[in-house]
Image (cartoon, rainbow, N blue to C red; front, side, top):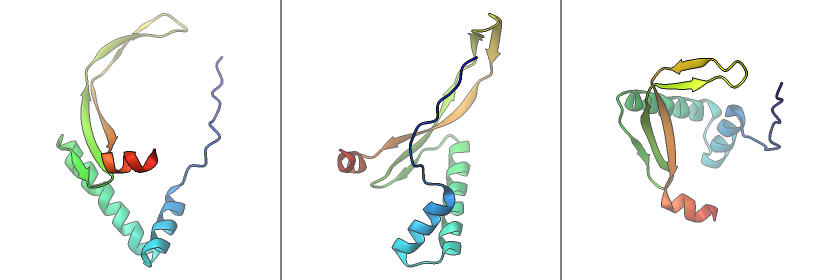
Amino acid sequence: MHTVKKKDTKAMDNKKLVETVAANLGRTTDDVGKLLDALAGVLRTRCSEMDSVVVPSFGTFEPKKRNERVLRHPGSGRRMLVPPKVVLTFKLSHVLKSKLK
């Protein structure tokens, strides 16, 4: 049996993100929470229609279709059919990429 090690990264959860953005903008956490919910709603709607969403100086959210494929289970050797699905990809903007280097 394989065990998966968790990375030692300090991920920012939703609550901390909302608090940080609220502090930076001088807004309430309720206002920022509503803003992030609205952003998620727009992403969900547009990407479900297979449209990309570009956020200037941040990046591009783009839905991509994954085709149906056959995989072999490594433990049992059984072949499994993986159905087609749509996944959301993200590509950093050149502005943000250059700031992270």
